[in-house]
Image (tube, rainbow, N blue to C red):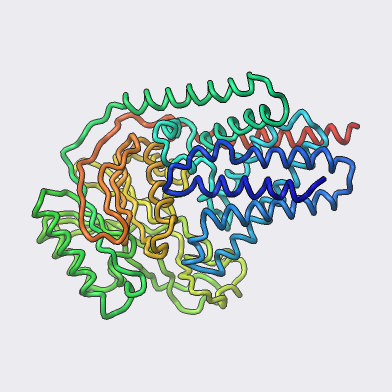
Length: 508
């Protein structure tokens, strides 16, 4: 086996997959990105069939690590802007994931050739699903997110979510692989053409035939673009609050608004704990005659963990402050960024409290938040939470008319991470068929309708305010009722294939 050839295959695949994540018209690359991976797995399965397991492990380690490092460096190198140790950590972690995954694929296919197609397709989707859970969950890398410029293809999200997109992409890759490398039969070109034609046509029809209702309730978004370097400096606290209030008044002078949204940690004080600032917020909401939903840090005096360095637990919080001088029950972020917002396993290994890498060590909230503005109900997602489709799906168990996402992407600077995070809001809107209002500290702040259109937007580091009436799609989406069975079903099929492979090997 010429290992240099298979390594080149891995690099090409990783480059194609990585480039498809940019704000460029490179979506089409993902339909070819996995052909070199399929070929590499097929070569290894044949040539390593009768070799020792250590040879398969070595091959998998080299190729899995190369694919992971190249792909992550291209697609999420912006993590290094936030935390260089964190980026190095995710490179190492995903090298282990992909190496182990390739090992399973090569081992299984080398012993039972007929499972190649289902094993490798189900395997990739199952891997994505599995990596959405656990202490190190990071579902940012799902294959389906590559189609961020393909609004018609994205419409199937309503039925199978992001995992259905990944499945269809892999299916097209497989048939193209079969045509190029295995059997040059026209059916292997015809099948992906038919899949794409039906897929696109369905999306076109669905996009243009969704019947929505525009409510006479308007939601505003304020973006003041405070640089991360000065956001938490005490000398800027009052001027930051003044800036939000002045932009709110500018918005209200142009048009009536029922709700104004400020971003994650917009108020850089423990707002609910500090009477002066809380009174200021309530008085301003009353003066402006508008409800305000804002993010802020929060703490509760409590000793909860062994070796906890101080008698407080902290939350990444948000709340609605009403025009009648009242406020609701605060919502605390549940899905915390591993290491960035909380060190994993603090409850099991108390010694980790001594690990200080600049992380916040917030406490997860434990419940969803639901807020009312006139006769509509909205539910918030703080930053990273919008990345989790099943978390959003469960949020819909109660009546939700629209979604609010608040975030502070100032950490990402002007990197592609800001674009990727923005577009995940579009994916969640289509899945749920809900309008989504996103307020970001330094951008992008956007309004997304149930079709996935970005109808209003504030760019990176732009200062200003936008507003839009709430567009409602009255029927619950299939995905949020039943659609999440799809990834479970795919993972189940992969495990069945894997079990049958072991059984057939033992029988022989």
